[in-house]
Amino acid sequence: MTPNATLPSALPNLRVLEVGSLIHGPYCGKLLASVGATVIKAEPPNGGDPSRRRGPFPDDTPHSERSGLYLYLNTGKQSITLNLHDPAGRDLLHQLVAHVDMVIHDHTPNNAAAIGLDEDSLRAANPNVVIVPITPFGSSGPYADYRAGHLGTFHAGGEGWLLPNGVALDKFPDRPPIVAGANMGDYQAGLTAAVGALAAIYHRLDDPDAPAGQTVDASGQEAQLSVGYMPIQRHESEGITETRFSRYFRVGGVLPASDGYVELLTLEPRQFQGLLEFMGNPDWATPEMFSDPATHGPELNRHMREWFSQHTRERLYAEGQGHGGPVAPYYTPAAVFISPQQRERDFYTQVNHPETGPLEYTGAPFQLSETPTTLDRAPLLGEHNLDVYCGLLGYAARELAALARAGAV
Image (cartoon, rainbow, N blue to C red; front, side, top):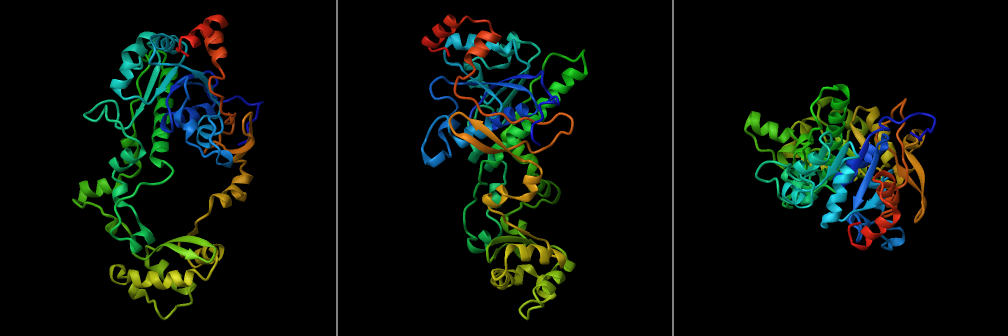
C-alpha cells in the first residue's frame, strides 16, 4: 500500500535498538519499521553491517552504500555507528537501552555477554525493555553458543535432506541434499522473531500490571522446523523417516513449457482424467498408468515433458486449470516485477536514495486499512549519529567527536 501521510502508523511510539547484521535480525527490524516503529540500527564504525559488502550492486560495482541486500533489509531505519568491543561503546549501548522499548540482536549468549548484550546487563539498563535475541539454535540448550549461517540452520531443520525434488530428482537421483536459495530460512527466522516481539509488546501495553519486559528467544532452526514440520510428524506418528523419494509424487512436478516452466501436481483420479482430456487423450497414457506412479511415473513424465514443451505457460495454466488440472506457471523475477496483480496493489514503491537515485522497492507483505505501512529509504552509515547521540542522549557535538576519535563510535 502506498504510504499515506494523513493516516497514523500502527506503532508510532515504539522505539527499537537493532544490533544485528545480514538477514534475520535486520529483517525483523525492517518489519517493525514498516508499521511505524523507530528502529535505530547500531553498526560497527569500520564498514558497518556486512550486508553492505554483499550486493548485488548497480553495474556490479561494489559500494558500501549501494548494496541491494542492505538497502532492502534496512528501509525506514536510522543508522548509528557503535563499537561494542570498546568499553566506552558498551557504556553508550546501555545508555541507549535506557531510552528504547526493545533490543533486537543476533549474538549467542557467550558473545552477547562479552559485548554487554546479555540479559542481566540490558535489564540493569532498562528493566522494562523487551529483548529479542535471534540466534541459530536459541539461547538455551547444548547448541546455544554454536555459530551457524543459513546453510547450517536450514539443514538442521531437516528440509535439505528432502531436496532436490521434482525434475531434479528424476535427472539426478543420487545428488546430495541441497539448500533452498535466497536465504529463505533466515527470512523465516526474522519473521518469526517479529511476531514474538509484537506479542511481548502487546502484552506489556495490554496489562499495566504485567511484569517487566520479557525476552523473546528466537531460534533459526526452530523457525525452519515450524514451517517444515510434517516429515517430523510422520516420523513421530507413523515411524516413517521421510526421504525425497517418498515425499515426491512421481507424476508431474516441474515441466518445461515453450517459454519457461510450469508446475503440475496431480493427486486425485479426477485430476488425472482432466489432464488426459486436456492433452487430447494421447495413446501413451491411460488412467491405469497414473494409478501406479512408482512404476509408470518416469515414462509418463518423459512424454509429458515433450508435450508440455510445445505449449506456452499461459495456455498450459489457463486451459489445464479449465480441465481441472492443477497447473501453475513459474514466473521470472522480471515477469513478477511487471505483474498487473502487484501493480494494482501498489506493492512496489519508488524510493529515492542519495547514492542510487530512485529505485522501486517491494512493500510490506501485508496491508493495514487504517494504519498504512511505510517505506522510507535505508540510511547511510552513521547518518543519524548526531540525532541519536546528541538529540536523544544529550551529548554535545564536541563530545561525540571525541568519542569518534577514541573509536567508540
